[in-house]
Length: 459
Image 1 (cartoon, helix red, strand yellow):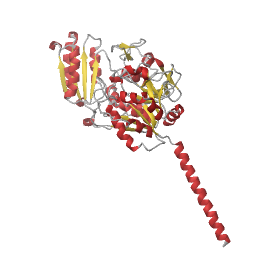
Image 2: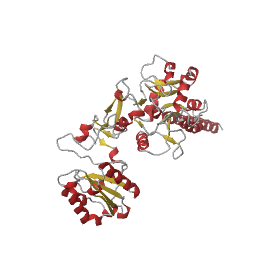
Image 3: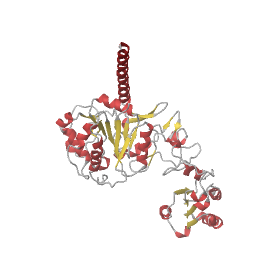
Image 4: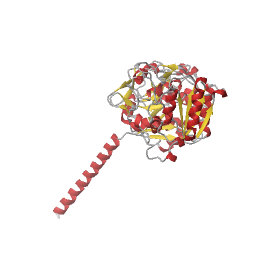
């Protein structure tokens, strides 16, 4: 009997120890598991949206997209204040999460945002701020500049809740504990066409609400880097395995970059490197992502291409140019020719080329020199022709570009990009068909990486 009681006592001790061990393991796993959820609004897929999702995938960030393929009811924010629909999307989504006290929710744009860190690092920075809700900050007070004096004074860095300077630039980025986010977005009603920036601004400027919900601004870009009005504050830096931004104004390395407003061109340039897209040691990762191979495609399955040839100026080696066009390793029955001859000097050679070879192509559209089409008009007509026949690709070639590689067209298609072009250079000169950047008036500007790209040190 005593032995039986001893065994029962030992069994109870073992069970108690096992339960404690399981609870300990569960607690450790829960503690170590990142509790970050990113919510964003996107009603259609764009290249910017794909870039956003790629950066999230690179760092293992959990993203939930709201509103995809739904009608946008927030107005045209390029023309006037609006965007309340985003708040209402978020309000609806938070119904699922508002009771999860250990969940941190981040709400950002998707068309012009790139992540630069893992959930662990983002959460570590967030908890360091001791905020319950953290809004990104900028140097512009939008949409109501008269509210500038209502902001708390004395903080170093960008003073105002994320805003850009005009309706097109408006988009708030913030993060916080799920219950507080829910309380903020449900604190008052908002029409879809109302201004979302003004909604969050008024909440933040209410001192009682600011204290109640523990709201702070990310003045020094510890997490959120808004580029509008601050492109000069940041520089691109590299580690052995990644690329990142450094804010030289405040000595911080932000983790989420937002190309709001007029800074979208700058973001496009930075996006060539950020989120492990390119590093000096390992080269271009993104160049080999989402590519395709045409090798197993049957002829009728291969993309339908409009090959548009523009002969706008007297050009040396025009005969060799046409020969290389013929040598392109791509089924001619899947190609339609669109040719504009704007140079009288070459009209006979162009006529001869088409007379001998037009039967090889699916169809031919020829704008002769005698027809008098201006260059701009001819180029527009070429694009219109592509839309008429619903072509898969439009390949535009000028006669001063010699395509010496017969695989050029196939290689470009296999990159599977929306817009792509071979880079043409002049030996030993800083000349190319590549514009590194755009000036404020939309013309050519030399980018900081232009020389390295032309010299093939960067790709």
